[in-house]
Length: 223
Image (tube, rainbow, N blue to C red):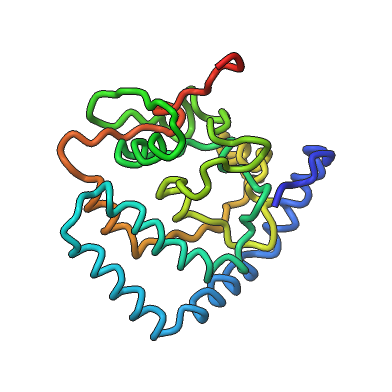
């Protein structure tokens, strides 16, 4: 959830110090709760669905939304244990979001936005620098994701396992980037089970990798 904007930097750093002193007890407990919710039967069913999708004789473009649907099933299980939720948009504002041209075309079709044409290869800026760091995602509207149903793989896969989004605060992000010892690691979880399926769809000759902001530069207010 969004942090209290009126807090001073010193107050946030103090809360970060308190969180650091707690250790990772809470995040570990939340991860354990997610693991318990994914029962052996649930896992077997999900693995079967993934196998069917992987073996399906269809194009990557048609498989991508089906992969997203499977990821949403996992998202529903872990949602009660995450800091992420409506109005939480730190990732959307502060870090690069790498996507493939396959995902960019999916977003373009869903939104009617024109995607930039980029040559094959990887164009994503480094996490610690580049013009897209600390630049809001072009699809962040009124502090909400305007393409939530069509959001990219990485936005679906990664999540913060904690009671709140304190460690996502820009103060902690800046401390992390400057290697300040007061920075607190963000307790993340990732849907790794889907990585091979995603790679099979996107790792092909001619793939373009870029930040979502590179594929969809911010539109001028007059647009």
